[in-house]
Length: 385
Picture 1 (cartoon, one colour):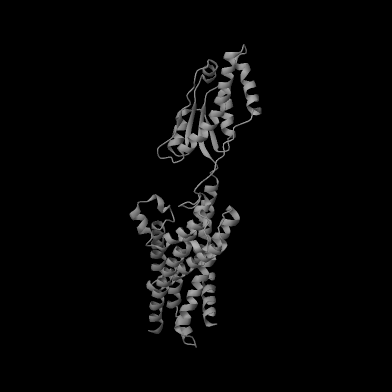
Picture 2 (picture 1 turned 45 degrees about the horizontal axis):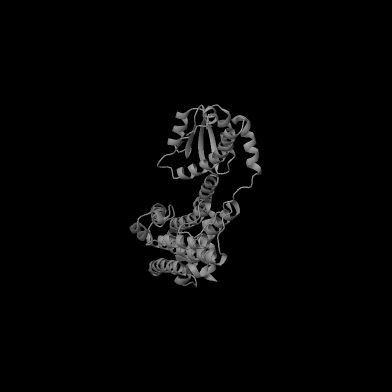
């Protein structure tokens, strides 16, 4: 009973601190909302289209705009489109040359330059999407040109006929099947950012939250509690329960926001809940250790987040560890973040369950035991001094 009372008292003190609540609860949710909105807004490859006048150029521009995989932007000036490409405002620039109608009518081929940059990772995807739309138009033009050589009708007369036949002729269906659906990285979009930000912010805020524990000691609250029939271990357990409740509250908020607003599927419920609870224990241990090691609240608030950010970046919260050299990947697994991200990858990308994440859970449990053990020894010494 004493343990629960101490935890509730500490939580009540934190709830009255509006600045702490902003950083502990609101800031992570706002950041994830912003990241999720930005990533959700990328619905296709951004292509700037610089089209000359002409019938075929206009039809091709309309088809590109109607393609579901493309987000086109019309430009009248080639240099302006290139500037947009350099500023990464678009993924590619498509140039539709002047005289396209005359060239096609004469039966000659037309080249459509597609400009990308080496720094743009979406260039190849944009090329494939544009090539698919151009191929549809080219098929119609080639059919009309072929018919023009075999009949007395003109090319211009046959183009509408070729288009109408194209809609009625049975198409050869190409079935795409994804093999090896088990991935080594989290799914793209918000399904990547939500679990990694959960790992990132829960740990950082727990470290920064160590300032509250220091403040409790400095105000003599622990000393007054121990003046009653309360043992030091009950104080430590109460504070640990407070931090655990705080980390689980943050995790619940992030999971709720990700699931309700952005449709993130958190995978197997039992595995997700177990992993969230274990990461909450790691965060609670880190927060307790922060409050036990630092001497002033300012130290915990300043140094704690810096340590958390560095560990999160090294552990793969800001980029997949699969893209870094093996030595950096191995160094990342010195932090608990990498094991938590590995577990989320197993759940979300490979459809794994609780049995599949036992190893990461065991490692996270070890981290939690180390953090909580060290914090307990340190706090017990200060409480009994």
